[in-house]
Length: 355
Image 1 (cartoon, rainbow, N blue to C red):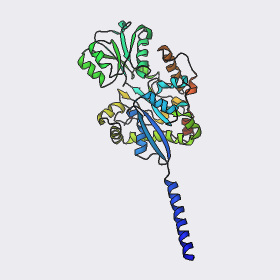
Image 2 (cartoon, helix red, strand yellow):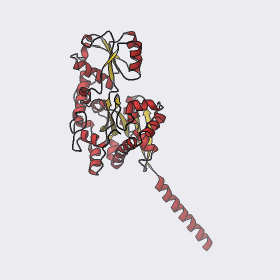
Image 3 (cartoon, rainbow, N blue to C red):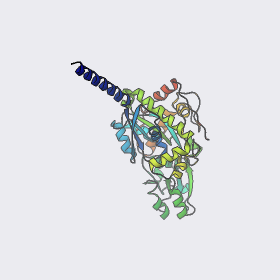
Image 4 (tube, helix red, strand yellow):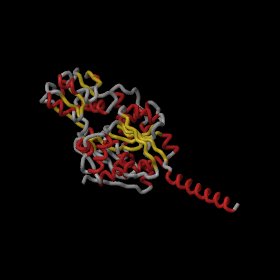
């Protein structure tokens, strides 16, 4: 009888210890979407591989169709989505449970408008110009035309992605096109005299704040799992710090994850731990917090403190001009800077410079 009791006690102790051990290793799952295979969106792979959020299991999904990622976020299939900020007014317009919680990476010259060698800017009225509809290239073309006194309705729009525009540019069927590398070099090689006439490193483009990678979150995720949302936001900035301090290692990590040549990763995010002139610029936490208006000081490139709403409103105006939206909305309905504010209140700070 005593032996039986001892055996039962031993099993009870073993079961209890196994239960505690299971609880100790259980991790809360967070589903994260990445908008196309792009280095600027891949910092959560650093979080995952370097265990920068040890209490969480991160499930990462790459959506090569950006709209598909937005649909998954709105449906609650993913909690976080990294994509371009130009979608923010569209999420407000469709009344989806989505909030833009942080600006991440301004385009710093990666996006271009190129002009055919037999064209001049003043003669573009009535000509064919291409850009992918409802994407940043559409906005860049619109802003470029406006800067040169041409309204969107005075040209013939062709809905083409950058790679799809290569053939028509080579054949002379297009007068101008939205494009980025390596396609620009291919067109210039085929048609000498083709030139880039504006890119997103232009000061006038930078200070709009429109050409920006951002972080979206499902608002139900924020309301029901707020502490997790804050932890995930912090983890992303911790990954930026790790990249800054270990740029060569992380660039190779990105190359392996995205299946890019490592050299091409450097042409987008650079090798100095901050930016690539002709690629993108990586905001540190403090710069992003200042755009949100939750930390004193001004962000770079002429954006004032707290300008996030103004950027979204300007994007909204341009979608109306380009026929993608019919009315203006309160930009605040698509923005939630309170998570960044929570981190500021917790004392989190980060300021990094090119090495």
